[in-house]
Length: 168
Image (cartoon, rainbow, N blue to C red; front, side, top):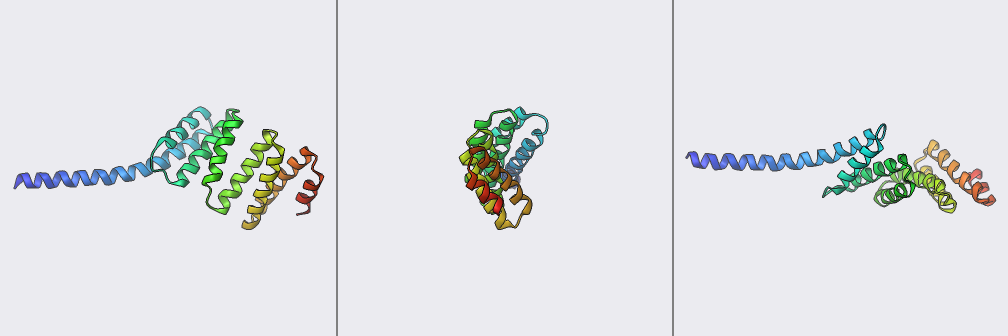
């Protein structure tokens, strides 16, 4: 009888540890992402390490992947690695599933392309961001998107693009 109880006890412990392991894994993803964003305030290298660690984990939800790529892009931006940041932001674009997510990443991409002097793309993404923020009725987002759109159009010498952006 003791042997049967011992086997049942081991089964309960094993089952509990599997359940705990699954829940700890999902919490670990969230904690790692939060840690990455926290490190952005003071240590870009550590933020990069946290995001990279998270991206190596299996079974990440798209939202967790998006968050890790966003944090990694911001870390690269902070380190002056604009091309690497752009690559991460493009991954964020692919993983964006809501209008708000798309609006935010389009605004980031508009600015990133502007910083890299890829003005046609900066202008295009500024327009995309404006369109998405308009769907959300987010006036602040619309204004910031218009600024990026108009700045890129002005730098390109695209008078019709400036007029289009300012007429909205």
